[in-house]
Image 1 (cartoon, helix red, strand yellow):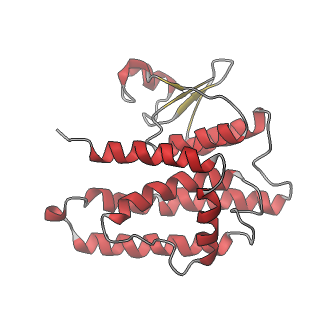
Image 2: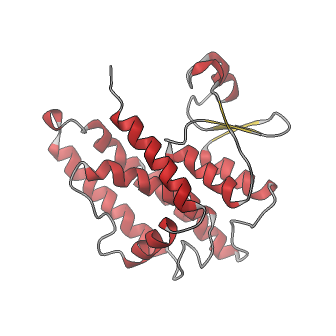
Length: 218
């Protein structure tokens, strides 16, 4: 098995977190052709994004959440999906809320990182939309320490690297306490930050992401 991408990406980090939670050694492989837009990489993943995954039979998959579900279903180790059908649906819902709303609203912040060229109206709109997405996630979180109960699920693995990334980006805009007034997310964040697997992997991701963000641009 191979995973193509960088731990600096929250989408790659979530797959690595699932693998580690399953007790699976999933190595990061060098991107074929030297980049995600190369002909060699596009032959594996025509979407031209990271990550991409190759299983033991040489079959390829794109899209991080799809890869996460595949690993959970095929690898040994604790299941990352609840047994109750409604709770499984809620895990998938939380993943979709992060994908379709929370991460989407980071785009305007990335585009406006330079204060000298910042579109304040665009940032203000994105800020409201981002905070609204957090309230929706708060609504669907369970009452336990983690996203859906008292043990790690796929939702936790998807959410944690995403919020590490967003927190680092939003800090540059003065948004240093993104979970203010959201008690369930605050409790969840504390549990994830001290989790034996998620905590160290999260630090590795955040270090990589900050190095990428602070690298000189041509």
